[in-house]
Length: 170
Image (tube, rainbow, N blue to C red; front, side):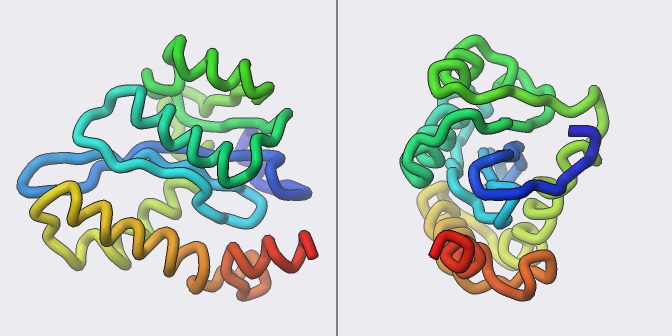
């Protein structure tokens, strides 16, 4: 993508990454997928491991939410989950085009990194999660009720991601 984050419509480019979430003194892992056009988090899963099946589940959720679109560029870093045979097969089956950041260059996925920073500052660092179930509850509330439906973005004309999507698809 060469750090070109301009996109002309929904379901053209999806971004993904994984971040660490502290739960009861251990790490859990948030796998998230974002539509670059309207900044909406369209699939996510919190898991206790970095196993690829968590990414597959997040991807399946995004597919269902967006009604199985085809021809999308799916951009991520070079993590083993994204390079796995199972994930590449899922991308191919759904006619996605895989794109990966240059080695060691977090700026190639800056919008995803920005979301994780926002999530951690506005939600994660303010709480102490005692269980994964508790963390999932608060992450659901933040992502699905606040970030996607209420949090305004200057890049979207100060609309939230869902409002922006609804206006352009009306």
